[in-house]
Image (cartoon, rainbow, N blue to C red; front, side, top):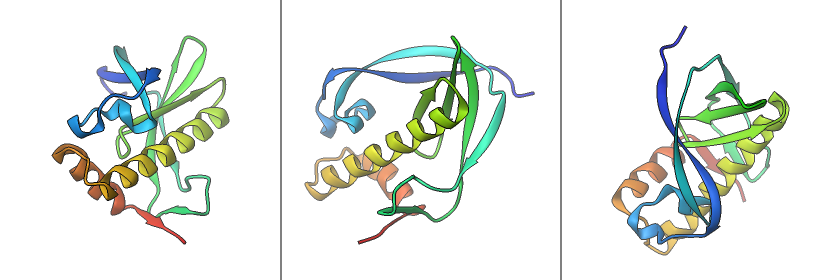
Length: 134
C-alpha cells in the first residue's frame, strides 16, 4: 500500500489570474484556491484516450484513484490535474475534459509566448505524449 502523500488540489472559483506567472489554476481559465489534502492512493487506472478525436495520447497515462467525501477523485501526474465524480466513469470523463482544457490553454498561451519557463517545460512534456490532429 502506498504511503500517505500531500497533494494540492485546485478548486475553481472565478476569473483567471495572469498565466505568465506560471499559475496552473489559470489553465482552466479560472482563479483557484489551493487546498492541501492528505489522502492515500487506493489504485491506479490507465487512461488511453482524451475523449476527443482532435487530441490523441501517444501512450496511456496513469491516474491515481482516491475516494473522499463520497466522490471518486483521479489525479494525473502527467497533466498535473484532477477530475472527480460520483463514480469512476464520471471521474474519468471529468479528468479527460480537464486534461483537454489544460492542453488547449497551454497551446493558446504558448502561441502568444505568454507561458512562464515552468509552464513552457510542462507544455513540452505534454507535447511528447499528446498528438494534435487536424
